[in-house]
Length: 460
Image 1: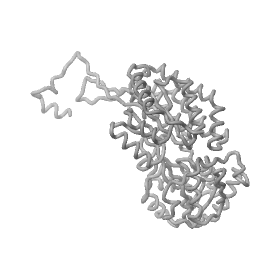
Image 2: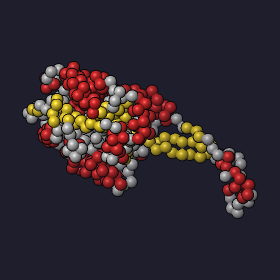
Image 3: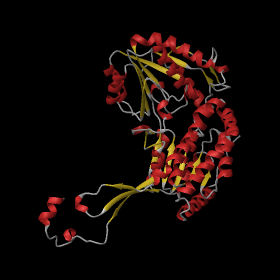
Image 4: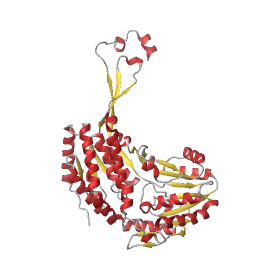
């Protein structure tokens, strides 16, 4: 099926109606926000079957993986917001310096207004609806733009949203990059974009015309370091899982391996064994091995197989858009596979002798969305101090995204801003500073002609 573009006039009408609805104040009460979060939670449960079927159709994503990596994460986010929303919305008092006596100081969280949420195709449910939880929680309206590369999922999501919410509050628009351009011509109060750095730059450029704040969740080449002292069987198991999850089409997937030269041969054997445990002797027959999203991505990822020596995998099937979990060694840092984010199940290996080589290699490149270190924990902390990334794991992969109590986001080329839990609420809110001054007294010190200035100087 093909997704039809939402007409420009329809987009304009939706934006105007949402702006009018927001101005009415309908989204401000906590009871309203909680009711909408509960409606979204109910909808996720009612639409679980068609969503899972659509994910299987578009990506060959199993029901188990769909629930684990998509639906359960959104459900957990909703429940977290329902649990804490009352506290997050509460007016907060802050200390006030002596010079401002007898004033009192506060901050209040207010919704930014009309939001635009643009999501990619790789986790099309989670990466669209998780930010929506923050928008609802903060009291914003939202226009959702799913990816046309997963048409079945996008269609089901549109049907679910239409059946759950009024268009003047939450709406879905569909289509290709022409629709993205039409959306970005409109004025929003916040844009939340998940996608590639190149598209993120276009979003930021368009947002600058209206001085619209942006949250950019991008990507990059996330390095994985396997150092002396690493538990190689366990390292291989966790890396094989992280790299083959969604067939490597994960923004925080381990992109390339920096492995101590003394460990490479053992790692190759253990990685092969781990892939077999996870996906069987032939991963193509595994119900849990996802397919590449489209022909263009298949051709790009397949071309990387000639950038090094294939020591595991290498099998491809164009008709199914299948690429086997693949290890490459003897890879040049200048090879094409080392230039752009791979976003597939191909893992190039580069060896090192000293940790300083690793630090230099990573810090000379763009800041990645994630960094993974396997080895002694204390040495891992030292590695983190010398490098930068959006998030990191020591002796694990991917799992930092699973904890809604810590921020998820990029830095530099891998993004700006973060979300999950309270940070999702904050992302769609403005922290408004308020000073409240009583009227029963009015101290003269601040007024011209500044009498007693010598005393005032001592207080300042």
